[in-house]
Length: 586
Image (tube, rainbow, N blue to C red; front, side, top):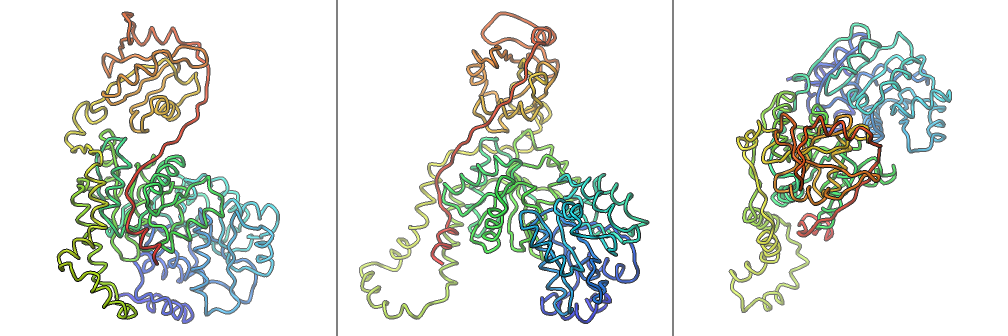
């Protein structure tokens, strides 16, 4: 077995490793550290989140620093403030036995004056977010012209967040003689461009395969209707009393809505998205790390940089728009050698995306049935029983035992057990006895009725399109708001210049008819028709005899005007988790 001693690390770093309790190097550390210590080189290392990448570049970087110089010699760029702070703290732990080695974090949302003072005192290593780093270079606060090593951590994430131009601008101020170490979970085109432009014959190391998910994470999915997504999440949470999860949503709005509904229903949850101030984000993350929050509902951008080892589940409330992003989501669990689950809630029309994800991560999903109410009640009951059985006895209670025995003397052992556990059991039993039924679908059913694209849906023509300021996403949001449907209640939106097509579940046809019967958009009547054939696009108008092809409709409504539309908000209901009650008691 490979040891840290065999990698060529210094005694100071080995002592710090011992203090941290690391026993043996991870695969990415084993492959990269000897190469980076042997000779100056550029490197591209592909490895999943949670595989020990910070130490993989952190140990060699620290060992390459000249402690006799206070000049900035190493720069690490990371996508988020949270990750920036995390890397800084870890590097300080690794370098605790090095005298006069200063690592400074540079990120937005904090005082630039305070950061400038720290830089002026001497910072051999700077860990920075691209935006703040670019700003400080432009103000001549930081000089990176003499750095020897530049690390691009979570490179794919930085580029996904739109930092491509910022990174190019920052690197243009550095020496051509420096070495660049690029660490990434995936290898999209933009990362390849950075590698070609700023690196010379980089050594490539891939842990596992490109984009492949870690084997410590299992992948499951549930097929429900769009309107049952939240109820499905509730069942998953209730069936796992010790769940400690990140729930991913596509949009800030859905993130806030799901978090609010969970809180209303008594769960310990909070939202993390871009509309929160930095102080609010810090507070949420600190609470989550301390397990004061059981579930963190987050957007992909806001969740970047989350590094918590004990996350049991990742729940995909919706699959991400970019399929590759799923790798980053699932990488939040199954860390530090622990097992985790990545669960996906999908509708019938989204099942094909599961196949796409499987190809990318190199692992198969299993379709699961949501637990029944009886099963949830049983799990909660026996979880409480285990908790009671394993509770350490407080001898301070001995003085009250005679009075307690007197109070229960007329009850049998069986009666006491029944009454004690009924407190927990009755609440869940009553909720799930009256809970609405969730319709679940099989894979075969999802691939039928139009090859899995339409299912039991009806397709419509509508005489608004690109000329009205719509793309497929904004039209989908507009229709969802007008029809009061879940986002996935409107599907297969196809926007043309002056008209569009969309699908809704067949049982919502009357709702579409009544909603748009007299509907006007900026004074112009909006015409909605059922298409006769989903492929040809021929249509018939509601409540009238006129027969017209889509081409005729297109001519009539060429004089469209643009509009913008805003959304609304909704609420949730009922059962509170035992996790929250236990937290309040502690």
